[in-house]
Image (cartoon, one colour):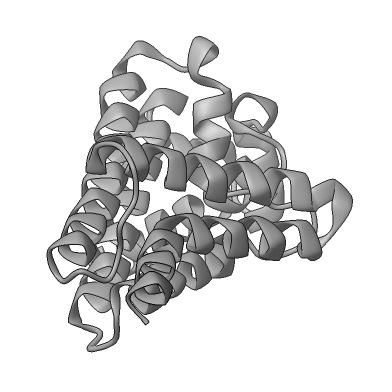
Length: 201
């Protein structure tokens, strides 16, 4: 019985994640979830009495996905640029599909209307992702793989914003704009080293 309840809870979270990617947190209801899953609204309220309870659970689900993907990238034996590319491919796999966006970006877009209890969880997710990219960029600088102007943290912010922004633009303009933006970001991170190497030659 406990396993079945857990599975039902996971089904609700999985569907809710898909709905925030296509509709946004404010634009789906418990009735939408109940209809799609073929259950009653009471069943959803059993697991998540209020929608903000579901919202916090969604943030925790995204956090768990982050932990898995970040660990996979950290353990990869390639260069820093290759690790960043692996992060990008992970982001794309989560946001892939017609009219989908990154679930974290979707929640960020709804920040002014989100329940108060969700906002600390959302900020924690933002910091978690930025800290991870900062860690990668710092390691790349130490290894002399990357050489960019400004602080590592500021560059991490620019990198994440470029990824999320390019994903949004690609919904209208197609995947080419995302690939071009990521290629330009890579050039920004490594171009100065290439220039210095040419001077040394």
